[in-house]
Image 1 (cartoon, rainbow over the protein chains, first blue to last red):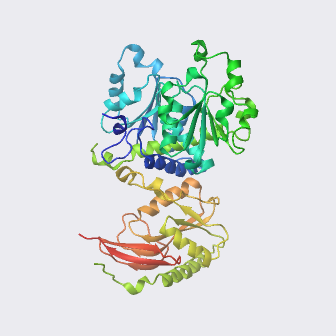
Image 2 (spheres, one colour; image 1 turned 135 degrees about the vertical axis):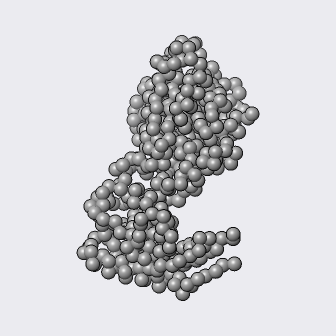
Image 3 (cartoon, rainbow over the protein chains, first blue to last red; image 1 turned 180 degrees about the vertical axis):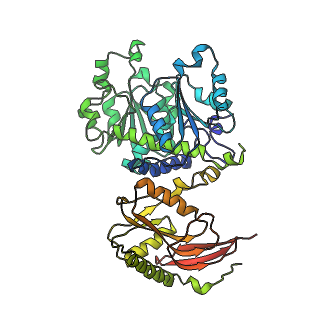
Length: 325
Length: 176
């Protein structure tokens, strides 16, 4: 079965959100529009709407995360759902219970949605194929494969600042090879009609097949940043350094770190984004991360609205009520 | 085929005049001097825009989109969205005039009241509607209604905004 089919129910509505790949433009726009509406909820006295009252959402985090887990939790709570945070390290898997046994146990507790983060690519997809028909799965990051809600909150942030996707040059800088964020962003940017997507980084961490993703590859940052409207910096994972794919942090910063100087090559109104957590002085200079062009903290805020949108779309489908799927 | 009972009652500009004068009287009788007004998307907001002008309300007009408060969300799912709610004032201790085009089952008003109370604690809420139609499913009634009509279950009354921004009500019958 093709992956994008798994994500939709019989009516073509979003059932699971596993990847931005293969989803239609209108679906991505629906997510952004719903998120736009949810964003007003966070500015109220009571930051809560009763939409998912009575629904239970389990956060299954097999890999550590603070920002993603908390924003998923907040999103669920602002929709009035009940949230279970399951810390996998200390739970059953260490006692030898299989993943599927654990899922089936949670299903027996009438959970409606699993939010899954896992260090293996394809984990969320695997879970989605094995859950009971009424359950939705949201991928909160699987290995180096996909992180669709991060990509959509980035699209939301870009649209807030730049409106028209079809006129943009977007530069993504850093470890493209290991980045599920970059992969999901590239699919979403392509679908939304961004004409010029650039990936910038040393040869060792740009996948050879990158060109097939519809992007332009640059190994020279100065060249890659020219006239960009959006500059997305990726987190440099320190373990890549030990794996000998990269030179020292200092050398990396010198070549691919975003400094005020290099940012001047982009358009004067370019925005600077980063999925976090940031390594100050490694991929980004502090004065840029905290500077006027940085929208990094806005991205965090937008993450709540986007996750509210995706959760309510997946759990508010008519086919659920009719018992079909 | 469209049946139009009580067609003479659906002179929409006249109904708007009736609504605004009845509302003025009600405010006077209750000694409310500085009310705020909230219209329910989409038809209620159109009516509210008219009333807001004719009643000379000082505070800006509020708009309510009750999508997130509907009781049929789990049955029909997410709606294609109109504009989000926007209340450009604090509702605390305010006298609120809630405006909708048609009062029917009362469910929309139930949702609207819940949403308003998530913004704060108003001093009072009164309900003004252009048309009160029979058949309530909840214990809700309008404080002011420009007209009251009875329709068959398969008939729908709808407020439209014309190109010149004038409003007109129409009754449509669903084929059985």
